[in-house]
Length: 170
Length: 223
Image (cartoon, rainbow over all chains, first blue to last red; front, side, top):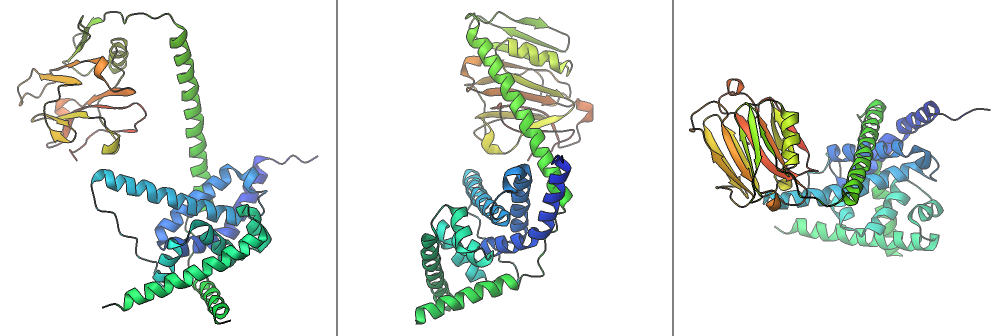
């Protein structure tokens, strides 16, 4: 009988990391805009994934788990950062400049979406998950995923149009 | 249908953006992920151990019969600690020696403390500091309350018995443990006068939450 040991887990995780890290980084980068921050968040999420690998390894879409964890960590980072700045009596730090080649309007518009809609867009369109898996991960029925995606895209389109208008104002 | 076409175009745009990032790669090797996780596990184990110890101590204290803190009068050549009937504790420092014993004696006198000699310790981040802190440079004494230069009186009364330009350690503090904020500890650290670089801190004392992370270094400039 073969005993599944730590070394096997380690090997399995290392293979997952090698295969998934770049995709996860790109998706998180589109959502946060800042390359270094995205890399830190993804590394943190993979660290948590390895810490809970017995569970994450059984997840229907481990990449989605990593991306969601990274984006949730970003929310925590942003809140903590804002609080520290407030305590220091400084002005709120402006959003970091977008990674070169990345559409900064898209990053800003995505950031302004409600969390659920943003998550559905990230999982369905950027990670190419199907409706059923997305629903399983987010704990919602397939119909809700579809309507959330539609509403999210619509809101994203409006946000982009509004940002476009603002840029045109001299 | 125009609406659907716009959404399809947006979906295509998202895919294009994602695909345009093909040259973006993670630079963190898998070994760094494993190392970070190992460090985190060690910290979690240490925290769990500390929590168990804290629970055990709390239980022991809760079950122990209530008693008055016993008087403390410890006089060494290097330092002395005395409790007084009015509830105050006087701590005099002449020479940086026997830090572990000093820490223990201060705790017995009702002042939870962290004592470090040969290095300067500062709690990380001003937001974790409780109202009173102070530091001494080789050229004089400065005390801060709420970040402003002041004479701290409510929690700690500091009496400098050395002229400002004296290089030796010869200070005494009167502390009122009952006025210490709950969960606070007195952190005091100092380096010998002959090892203080010009403009660097010789000694620091602060009241900080016992959970605060404290950084220690051989030589620290006032920040």
